[in-house]
Amino acid sequence: MSGAASDTTPARLAASQPKIRLEGVEKSFGSKRVLAGIDLDIERGESMVLIGGSGTGKSVLLKHMIGLLHPDAGRVLVDGQDLAQLDYREITDFRRRFGMAFQEGALFDSMSVHDNIAFPLRRAGWKRGEVEDRVDRCLELVRLQGTGEKMPSELSGGMRRRVGFARAIALEPQILLLDEPTTGLDPVMSAVVDELILDLKHDLDATTVTITHDMTSAFRIGDRVGMLDRGQVIALASPTEFQNLTDPRVQQFLRREAHGPLSEGK
Image (cartoon, rainbow, N blue to C red; front, side):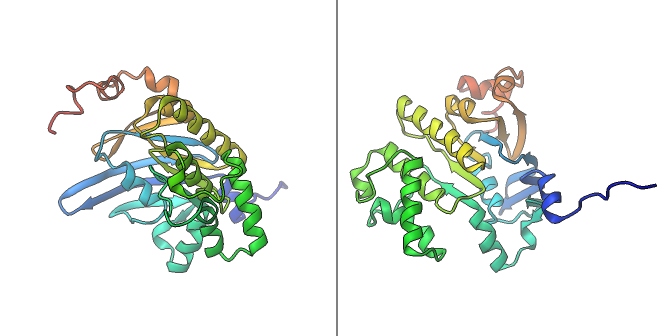
């Protein structure tokens, strides 16, 4: 019986898998159990938003995705690779697939905007002309052309946030991890940042994972929204479906109510 042979090359197999897969991930710090068996698939090119109260494990989960932490049990796979199996050189190369942007941009105050964005490029060994071209392109992508010589202290909060995005995408990452990208911004600037996140996802064809407490932002940028509580994913749905979930924990969070199942035992 004849037939086409199945394609089992590494590239083909990787393309058929989720970009990020967490299987039964558990993590404790001393007696405090932070992750209690997380199962989660994040698809290629997806914008995943993670929400939940403080201390529910969101940031710890993000650190597992980039290999800064290893689970006590379970596995974290990116492109089918188990991060716990990578040696130091492999994990260093692996992290170049990621871009990370933090709440306040985490910029170097003593460096200009240009040098902040150029920093990861120079560390990666890019040549001077390549660095200049890439910095210009990143500034264009975040709509900050002409600001390269400014210092972070001369920028507004929203502009600093965008410089942080520009640095995060400098190495053209496959995955963007964003930690509270709109915290502290007014509604107009939050909408600008949300639009920028969607534009970057499209321009880079990147998989995006965002932690936020801003539900307007979550529903604007997320393909799916996942909610964590007590170290577990308790809800996962599209923005429209999420808002209609009847789980009392989800509804308490969405309504910002002080009393309910989320506050029991706290």
